[in-house]
Image (tube, rainbow, N blue to C red; front, side):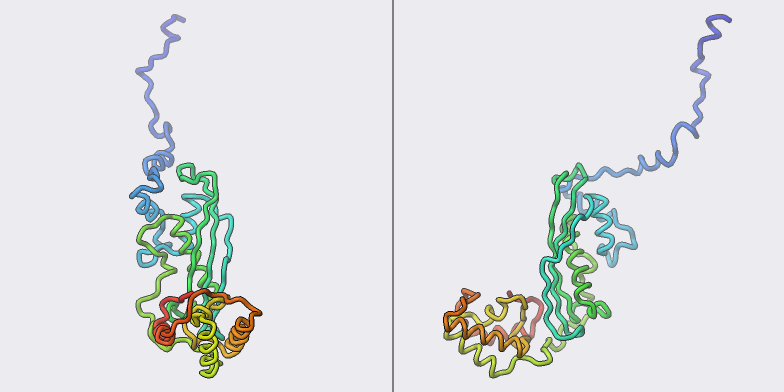
Amino acid sequence: MSSDDNEINLEKLVPDDENVFDQKIVNEVENLEVPPYFYSEQWHEYVMRQFSEEEMEGGHPLRDGLVRVTEKLLGPIIRREVVNFQSIGSDAYNNNVIVHIRLTINVVDDNHPAYGHNIVEDGIAEVNRRNTPAPFHLHPAATASSKAEAQALRKILRLRKMVAADEITPDDMVLNDEPYIPDHPITEEQVVVMDLLCKRLDVSLLDFINSGQSKYVSVEQIPTSKAQSMIKFLNEIQSGKQQSPVSKKYDHSWREKNHKRLNDESTIKS
């Protein structure tokens, strides 16, 4: 056998195109999108492209989609905490619930500024029959928790000028119906006594009624039993047994402000 027989003629070698590369891998590489920098202007649009059609509603991401995309792009949710829970009302129909949720994410994406660390974000949501459609307002605690979590997730993802679908109040919701009043509301006599004591103590009445765990949009939303406890506490402040929980001075125009709150429950003053 000559030396020429041992030589390989490379020119005669024809590659088998079908077996050189796995076409699935080729397609994945060709369609691979390099994530933009977390704080860049392109980040928002990049995140929005990660949601499927089923995870969007009216152009806004749903909570389940926010969970998936957050864990896909940043890392796992390692802790969910209910920081605060407030419920005002005597039944599910009239109940007004406020939930404060805190999420902790373990960042495993090495392109993220907080790579290798945990990031924490809060969300706060309020649910009542004026801002949440049936049947969800009948389960205000669970619904408010979902809303608050969705809010925290979209803040973690740094979505700009965008709210989660769970946070939106439908356009056809009736927001200007009768305000919530408990079954046994504070009496006018109790209001007069509270006003007199607050004036003597030079304490803001509206700030005082919201100095505890329960928050009230207006005086009329205080149950009569709670009003009795408030009056007792004011008497103890007057006798020196308790310290005033508020520093704001008495406001002679509190009734006008209270009336405005009663007719506009869009925010709760703490």
